[in-house]
Image (cartoon, rainbow, N blue to C red; front, side, top):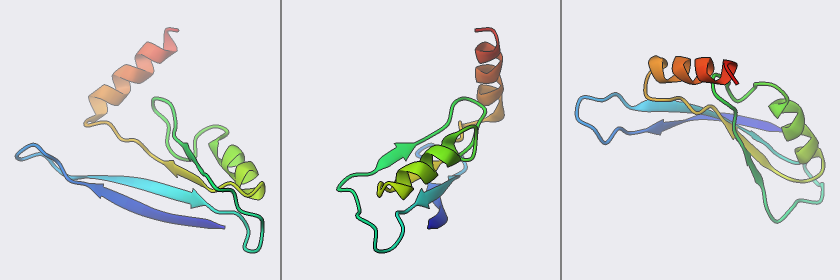
Length: 91
């Protein structure tokens, strides 16, 4: 089962806009043996909560009874994100 939402992060700086962080929670099937802990998954630079193998990892863990929370981590501005992608491409 998947539950989605958005977390609003209020800026601590004057005149700065609040940021919205989308999230998705993969839950074990109702009636399955649930784990006493969960997993928090996030992406690399330039990605989002559905990047790469994150959905498959989350689904497999949830099927094993482990709840998984994924979110999209958005930097303050696009320039920071683009710089991180350029640096990563040079590695």
